[in-house]
Each structure stands twice: as C-alpha cells, then as structure tokens.
Image 1 (cartoon, rainbow, N blue to C red):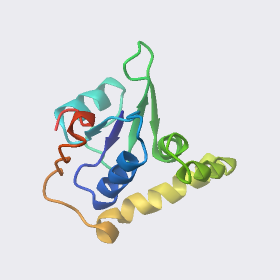
Image 2 (image 1 turned 45 degrees about the vertical axis):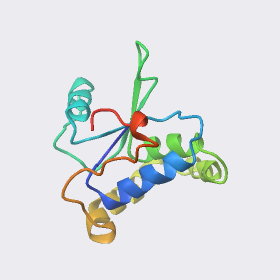
Image 3 (image 1 turned 45 degrees about the horizontal axis):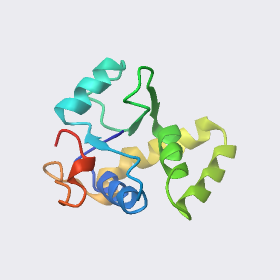
Image 4 (image 1 turned 30 degrees about the vertical axis):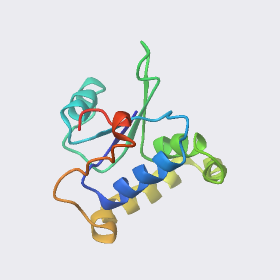
Length: 134
C-alpha cells in the first residue's frame, strides 16, 4: 500500500504513473490525509501531520508489514513497476543519505513546482478499487 499526499500535484502524477505501469495491481493507495492514512501512520509511530513523504507498507495484509519511507519507498515502488521504470533501481548504489537528501529537496518544493489541489483527487472508475478510504 502506498500512502501519499493526496493534494500534491507531483504525488498525484506519480500515482497515475504507477497505476499505468502496474498491470498486476500490486499497489493500492490511500492519501495521507484520509482516515485510514492517518490511523496507519499513528499505528506505525509516524506523525500524521507531516505530509512531506510517501510511505509504502510492504506486505500490509500480513502479520508483519514493513514501513518504508522517502527514497527507500520510492525505490521499492520503482523496482516493482514495468520496464523502463525498474531500471531506475540502479540508484540504489548511492548511499541512502544522498538519496534522502534529494528526496527532501524535491519534497520541500513540490507544491511550488507541481501545484497543490484543494482536496484529494478522486480516482477514475477504472482504478477506484485500488484506492482505499477515499
């Protein structure tokens, strides 16, 4: 499951890219602002008021899910998409502190660069089943 900033223009574009490159339906989504997103963040000891990162709950239906965030979460998603996206996993050779610094730079400027919506966008009917708690 991917928890993302539902009002962020960049995040919504990224979700659209994931949907079109994940034909097996591996990923499900919930906005960080949703009731489900907030409760999951609290369950895993994350601050639901901080909306500057994405989270991936790996094996979220199992008894022992893992929580990934920031660059590690993005790389996990990229690695599970169709080619050519999965080739970007080559970035994993870089130290995580460098990748997270780049992630933070983009996150701090995402609204200015990519826009911000007033409310979370609704998915098209083709993908509605992949979104939880919208």
